[in-house]
Image 1 (tube, rainbow, N blue to C red):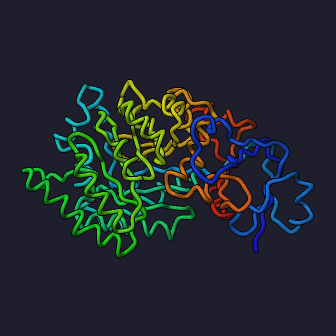
Image 2: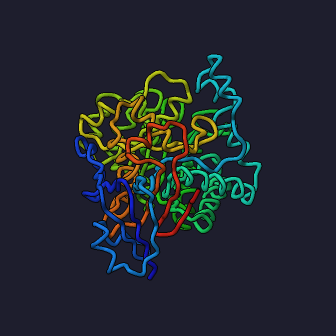
Image 3: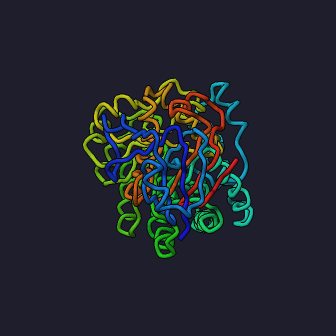
Length: 418
């Protein structure tokens, strides 16, 4: 069995502790250790200890000299939309001139533009576009990436998107988690009437979901629960059916207006409620009292030009579990740069650095149901590591916009190196 020994790190940020999401004051402890080495055996962390305790046991290991730099768990990007065709840069100018998100959608832009584009492309084209994006995400420190469908919005095109993700799982040296987001938007062809809208919900539940479940194309189902998109009742119907089909549950919730999405996520036992830029106080209380992780996407709010960010400080102080993710997508968060999201977590969401790192590692893993073995540098966990050109953990969000990741390993295998 292969062995690696990581030595000479200035800090090892272990995020050690319970195999679950961290809440409240727990998030302030990132488990920073000094003067320790990391032993890897096969795909698992074997030990974290002083080098002298490991040298004899792992005498034959390949030694990785960290050069006095910081090692963290590989980042867990628990919310992305990486399967798409062309970029939508024209919408940024529209927003700058005062055209709102929903108005852009009404004009055929937004998600609808990406739907029309994706439907015109083959599975092979989409795979060829997505693979370099995934590898670029890895170059910024991510070793686990959730990828949603949601730009197909038909049986054929949603399945095409999910099959691209399955191909990426086989081709990319990362852990990829597929999510079915057929309920990303009501397609234009189903917007003629309430009856047609109901037909689309029925198509999702009765035609598409059974295939997704039977072919095991997704781990989770997600719904964009927002005024003008899917109602609370529609969201509940889709997610109830998805749970019965064996999928975990996620929600796009309360992004632009308070809509009860956070409360519904907790009620349904969803693994995460994502966005939450406009979450209500009632929603925050629900998240604090439930198991659902609040996944915040500050890059999206920044790119949309929204003055208000999700109330991370209030959530953490209430006792909610908070994660951070990129929301990488072509319209509202076209960034590969997870460390930039950490910067926004600190400077815009008023999180301290430990909270931001925990939110991007073990809490991101919890938002994917993976906290038992991912997001921590601890014996028995998956050997998912990121090495940074930094001497102190606080430098990772400090050098904003800079790519400081030197290398990443997922399950003990290198997936990026400068």
